[in-house]
Length: 321
Image 1 (cartoon, helix red, strand yellow):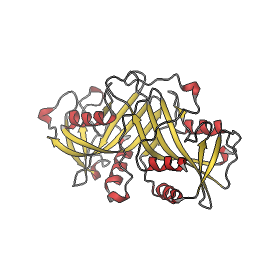
Image 2 (cartoon, helix red, strand yellow):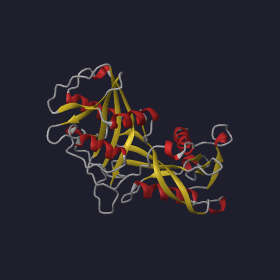
Image 3 (cartoon, rainbow, N blue to C red):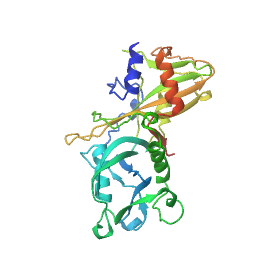
Image 4 (tube, rainbow, N blue to C red):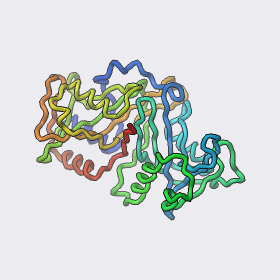
């Protein structure tokens, strides 16, 4: 079926054009603009062959002398990848090739942090004699020294990001999630498109589909005050009038794609996050809205999805609150 082909495209890292946004119209007035009403942050976890992580020593007055990952705000008119490469160059003196997103943190509908893995391609690591307003210096730090008190860490929020990085680098390539870099697809709003699958105890799999026009994966606008990625998931389930949602177990497993436009001529900086969400239930929940249905997946796609879910082979999608 075509809807299964759509899911396969997403699992393969291909771009799937967004259909009409199905719910959250009350939030659609929010138009994200970088460094105005939207805080997009980038960071990078770079690990060398000696299993040391790249860290920088802060120069800012508020955190002078403390250590942190290369990180900073996305500037207007730049892509997320460009921002990550710029921050590493400015703060650590090194040039990188961004390989994949490791994680996306959702602080609110107006604050997200995109954490990248990358490879060094050039430059010279910044030393104290090259200190400037961006940083004092950069160093390769042994993992054991991150939490032993020998370094004054700016904030502990980087520890989970570093562990995600070590987990990624520590796996053979075939066991990692598919490399996933943001694609520069223009959007005017913030949108969440969750691939919602109901997993029965018998390992049967059902996909939530909107059939109002052409069958498609449902989506929802993200509001600036949304405190969790689950907010938009529950909005879709409420719109579909899915029975017993509170009784089912909802888990946002990770991200399949990120679409963001940072082109110079972009007046707004919308984003589309496509995730994979599981709903565990003993039976297929009833749907009262005729515009929605559960599609029973019986093809090879079922085994592929179940295996990826089991192995957690997705970009981490982390709710901070």
